[in-house]
Image (cartoon, rainbow, N blue to C red; front, side):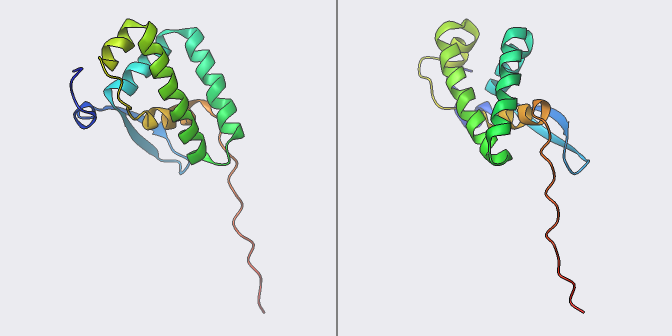
Length: 130
């Protein structure tokens, strides 16, 4: 597993079904590394509380969901790098060379799970031409 390329790493997705703002359920999958981070954080309450607070703060400060997910993914990558220096599970996943991996789906899932929903924008005002 350590020597598998990023494309191959994504071959075994873990699928989660999350509510979407449209009222429908949306399926999202996690790659192997995203699933490892998700499971690690879920198993460590202090880590989970830290990330829940961070996600809420980032969602509130961002101009939109895309910007929040982009910034959160950057933070998750920094976290993955830091954990790979001190935690055997992450060290094993990172291998000898720490190549950049995508954590975007995990960022989007955590935003949906932990960030308060953004208010919907009202439809643009239409003028009545008589």
